[in-house]
Amino acid sequence: MWPAYSGQFELPVNAMRDEHHSSKLRRLRWLTVSSLAIALQTLPMPSALADSLFDTLDKGHVILDTRLRYEGVDQAGFSRDAGAVTIRERLGYETPEFDSFKALVEVQATQHLSGAFNDSINGRTTYPQVPDPENFGLNRLQLSYSGVPGATATLGRQVINLDDQRFIGASAFRQNEQTFDAARLDYGGIAGLAATYIYIDRVNRVFGERSPVGHFNGNVHVIHAAYDIAAVGKLTGYAYLLDLDQNPALSTATYGGQLAGTQRLSDGFMFHYLIGYARQSGYAANPRNLALNYWRTEGGLDYAGWSLTAGMESLGGDGRSGFQTPLATLHAFQGYADAFLTTPARGVADGYGKLAYQTDLQFLGGPRRITFAAWYHEFNAVQGSGSEGHETDLEAAVRLSEHWRLDLAYAAYTGVAPIASRHKTWLSLTTNF
Image 1 (tube, rainbow, N blue to C red):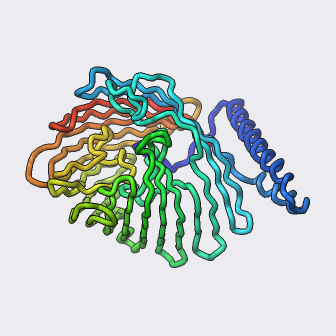
Image 2 (image 1 turned 90 degrees about the horizontal axis):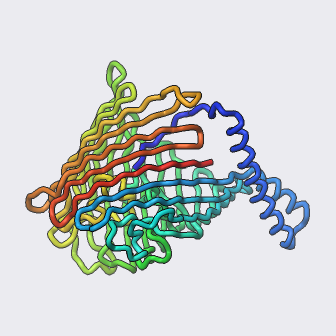
């Protein structure tokens, strides 16, 4: 949901605060490595090898990530408004590369600081849903190997984000992100080509382990390849074969591709574009014979911090089923109000426009990146005719320092029965190291 920023920021002006952050990270790394060293001492291995391994681990990266958030929901059909205050904390450690191997472990906790909302499992059904249940457990545990030139293999519980996450993504907007128990192979040994194969046997969804819909088991095959065409853009092809035990109606085979790129115009203008198409059919134990189309086209101009985009995205429907993307980062598409997390049986066509602006302003002792964006969506059925509502989204993000970020967003969806109108507000404070 939040706009990404890849630029550089100056460190905070408050040197004492920076030194405190640096000291805290050193203590966390020392604690993590010391704990591993104690464990290693109990293993039967030569002391020289243990010392070498300890020195290697000391060069690793401690992961510390927290997000405090308020989410308010006013939705038609509910007697109360939701007001969810939650905090998400992650602590992990990634080793440096050792004989072409690298390991990562990360735990996560989500806690409620207020209770006036339905978190999807607490039974408070008089409130609208904010699907951020309390949770504590393993978020990632993975081992990667890069000893073959141009290739990397990753095994274990991991985050997977492909392209813009329209089909496969981590849903990182939610406090409990979506992870995958998977084996992944990436190959980039040919100039301009990036190829990926992933086998997934479990999807750990945002609803948490205690939810009856907290995971998908099954057999998922992901085949993805992208090639950079000079002066044209990136051409991508993919096949997503989903065999999901918990919901056979979502077991589908989706084949498609897209072309996306940018072109420099005169006087500092840039033109960006995207065009994509996919076809979805029933797969594995799906009881329905599907033949659904997906297409998306988008274009826009960028100039001096401003960006103007217009596009159309269509997810088909046949009156019984709609084109579904159950492993996607759904919040990033078809409006922030999340009215279309499940595609209606008649499908949905989303005509949208976006105006965004970003700049650096001097405050808090240095340049701070500020981003503003406004979206408008007009939704219509694909099969037959008729409106499915419209939505306006507003958002702003401020990078307070190298490690701190503040986000504010608002979404107003005006629905057409049976989809309820709703207003949502978010205020988030995030820190990561």
